[in-house]
Image 1 (cartoon, rainbow, N blue to C red):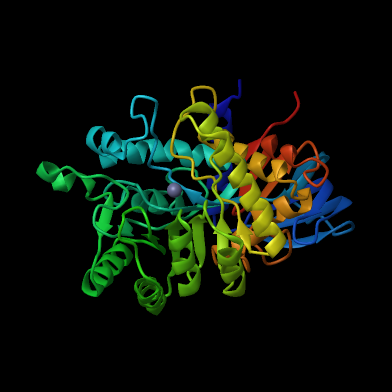
Image 2: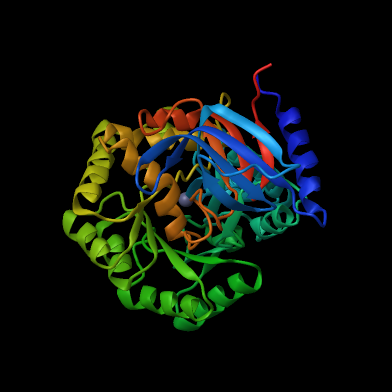
Length: 418
Ligand SMILES: [Zn+2]
């Protein structure tokens, strides 16, 4: 059993050190340093961190006087991981049995935000230093979590937030006529251009840094023009758009409209995947195998279809980002652990370790728009650094055994041998 309280204490102690006027300097001795960008690793490297940033990397860089030395010479050091599709404020259990209604009725935004604090901490503990949270957070429950993490009130990854999900009437729910209000504020229903503009601007006002639309969970779906309109309106304010699309038609519309990422894409044909590739649209696969095994009965043929879809997307060359889409709990695992189970479908699909590692770091950071400041261990980059015992280039499952986590130069976890 991990001593979570000890981990938290370490975070508070070192975090407060970095708040002072003089930037804290830390030297990390890395037994092996992995570069996910080119799939290489080098032995016996030193990484110098000053304040929140990496300032030097190499085998012979001098360790400044007074620096705190962290000895990871028996560990494999790499950049922190990125989960491009999370729901920190949505935790369904078996009692809810797949109904969003139950969550919205029994869970206040305040309670869900408290759960989100625990989930975000678990994500960081397991090596995710950046995440993109794609809605289902009650009444903007994540906006305050983002603020609290940025201010150092609670630990958590760097978070991007999509606020309320914008969707055609009904969103992802089947409403009952007597209680039309139950879906709000979970979703912002928008069926006209005016409603789309309003939904986007409300989201931005309340802190969203991404826009998420659900394209196709109702018989009426957003058209290419609708989605293009959203992409443009969001872009005017400097935001990019993620589109939930499960069907072939929804996927095509979103791919043709040039969204930044398509979430799920379970039924995407080769032709639709090619459109995504041509338009530089990322596929965030969110292949729900662990969920299927635990909570819902899922047809084996459907599961195999998802694996095949990963293989086809890889072959066609669609940009891919890692997204777990975990919105449920398991009694035996924390949120971060369950998220990491979503590596398994990529292994089953036969993708090389190098590709999977790149996807969960550099490529996901690029999608999130933080590729030039995070996910590389190079001078000038944010000090988001993790360590594992094994080398993920040899066995990607090594990522499930994170032993060290630093985010923005603050030490959060370090499992030292006694
Ligand atoms: Zn989702």
